[in-house]
Image 1 (cartoon, rainbow, N blue to C red):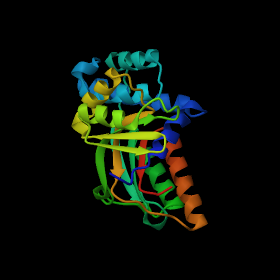
Image 2 (cartoon, rainbow, N blue to C red):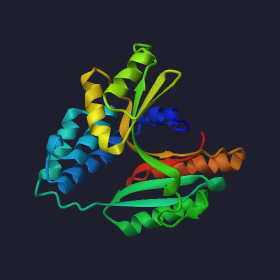
Image 3 (cartoon, rainbow, N blue to C red):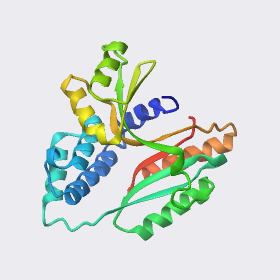
Image 4 (cartoon, rainbow, N blue to C red):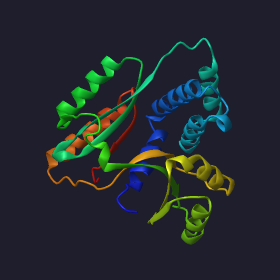
Length: 243
């Protein structure tokens, strides 16, 4: 498989170690709370959606205490927050496809902010499904081998033995792809084998990429991504910009 930005995953996750760390944990905690409420259980073994988010949380180095508190909040009757998941699709400069997954308690506020970002830095919001067709939903697990502690062939065989659908190696990064339904089982099996992840979640993977050569387009696209990712209501931003 080709065309997925491994380095984007690495940079995005390592970014959680800087000033955005608290914001990243807050967003993951919100996902945990909603997963618990909608799944009706605080046990990842009995709540597949929660299990998926917990894997993501651990890959982002979210402390176990934070994960536990978020689960307890989701179970608590005193938590009256009500979030809904809304996905927006639109276009960045030069037709770059963008999918924005949000979780909000005020859809009017979020819609207004999304429209503002896309109008100012991109080519506007589109109708539901306008760009989703050009992405594939996949479980994506990223392993950093910067210290060269892993052998490529061994990791590939372990990944495939654990049920992965595909494997890629690029420089010091290994990317493992799974069917979304197999993500929890594959990540658990790899964890049991001693692997740690720098990123692990179900993603929207572009089928192809768009290159930007105009400096203004590049600047606007980066600004669009930054504004979206900094928004408290935004959980994930997927795009096919070839950075």
